[in-house]
Length: 88
Image (cartoon, rainbow, N blue to C red; front, side, top):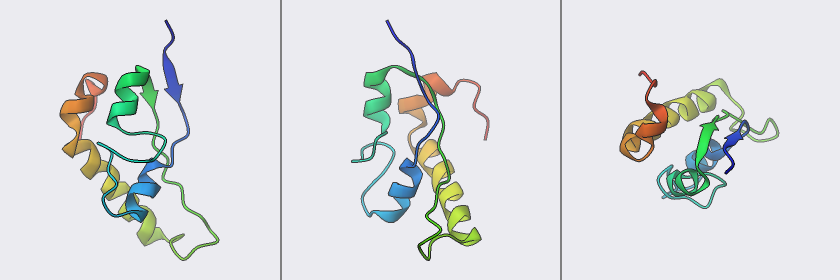
């Protein structure tokens, strides 16, 4: 039995870039289904941006942070057991 802790994740960037992409179901490396199947015990979400693109701005990073909180709130039932100490 193995627990998984992922400390790098640019899923939020992918969600912000692609219409129809969400934490619930996406083509990114991480979504709720993959977290459940992989029995993750820790998942960090990086606010990663590419400085070579126009999106590398303070405003875009704030958009990603807002999207992160929105996605957590929308999917709290699916991932709530893992976030029992999460406060927002």
